[in-house]
Length: 336
Image (cartoon, rainbow, N blue to C red):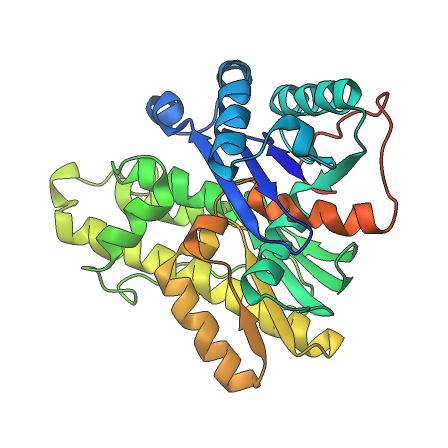
């Protein structure tokens, strides 16, 4: 199966066999195009996908040592995401499916992030609680089966990954914010500032990071009308703010995962998405596993950020005969 992913700012293609072996996985990143804006610009992303989608497919085929005639099906991410970006990958997939007379399967980007844990484990992992935490999503699911997900809760405002990007910008750190904050936080005190943990004392499985971003802004710049002298924002202050911010995000993510596990009686937690690459978060997940006596699965770092290999979930749809027609469309947005 050839799988394609273009939901945001990564143009990706992979070749995956029916045993879920990844024969090739190619990702063309756009970080350098969006860095000066501090976030993804949809129009720039879509145009970059147009330039890169065919070379990425060619390279995936070459590295897997297969031809188009060797393919048995096409899997493509159709939701959720940026509409222009999604359409580029979907158009390429539909064209190949039509020309080669191959079945076409739709892949949900969020579900694929969780399925990356199944791929990494090399065995069945469902039912499980699933958390997708990235630049666009912070969603909790009850995953009864590979294609049977119930949304338990999501962020009411900003995604955790977006908060990392925005706070990094406030601190004058490079984009993307996640790796930048993680690095500088290593020299900071995570208890230096008592930043808010939204919904920490509530049972609802939702997230909010807008107030946390505001608290960081006030700590750096002062709360109007009282402005802070920029000279007092020393490198150590920046490190302490970064560490305290990171700790607040991780605390909330861990808390809501624990609540979801307890509420649904699950013994397995699957965590995917770019923020799942954060070393502090991964360390706390292992502590959660020990405390709650549950299994916590995270993908390798290469499968945390957007990629087409995780779209191997398309095999699950194909086995059930869930193919789509050429007149199907993408479903943009954030939560599906």
